[in-house]
Length: 110
Image 1 (tube, one colour):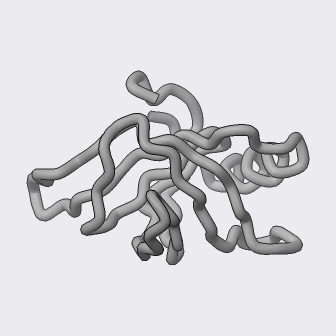
Image 2 (image 1 turned 135 degrees about the horizontal axis):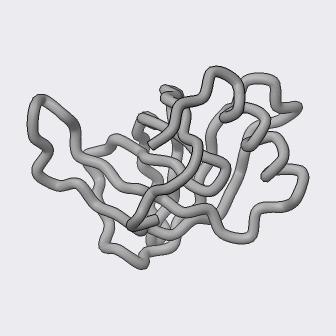
């Protein structure tokens, strides 16, 4: 995720995540078919694996994915917020298709 290529979509929804047995809340900032950025006060080191839970409009059920911290923002500038870039791990083809179709609507390139 360090090069962050591809289509991303600004997307704000509540995200629940579990790391090291602890439940946390945050909000998504943006999303691609492969990753999500979560704004949160609870920051974990790069490489930490998490369970992620969020709603995607149009999806038949809540998304429950496994992810890995790939980027951390601890000292935000310009009024931004702290957060983590999370790469999805082992997403099913069904989940990837739903994510891809959601991101493609009103997309923008980074």
